Image (cartoon, rainbow, N blue to C red; front, side, top):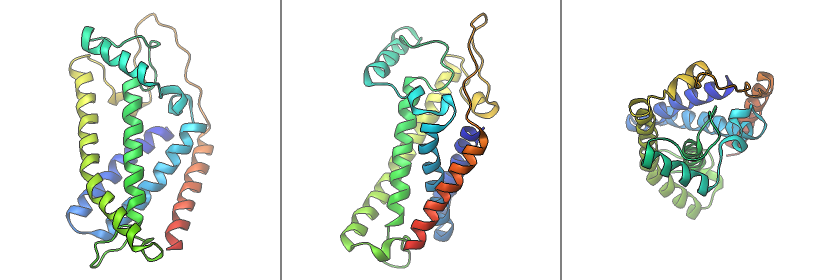
Length: 215
């Protein structure tokens, strides 16, 4: 549940951040960005101490595993040599998770130091050197397009799995349950108590609030 709430909360907040920027509602945009940063900090910690399928150690694989998986899909329509069934993210999905987390974290952090040199300053602009503000402002502006591209690739991959492989990747992120082949015995993933998730989220929010206040 903590991972699923993170996922859909992030989807909603990224949509709000994009829409508010387009509509020039920068107070909403900055609040959304700060909340996104808190969620990302939570996810980074949860990827270490969280439930089994949420942990990076469960789904982050090396380049060879990702390549083998991709080659298997292209050649036969079936994934390459990975343990089956995959209860969490497959190797390619794990790579996409890392790319999205890295891009969104960079975007959220750069937003703290971003200025339009007219009316809108990020909360840490007053304590940053002008060169730092200029560099982060450039990163924030350019990376926004890159994030949209990553989101598009992510959505297309989910659709391809649904239409071509007949594998619904959305249902598990809504219900928390994933269909596995008949006759295959698997153990339920180990779960970390939700109380720990709340503690981690509260700590992440506190860190972001302290950082913003420091500006």
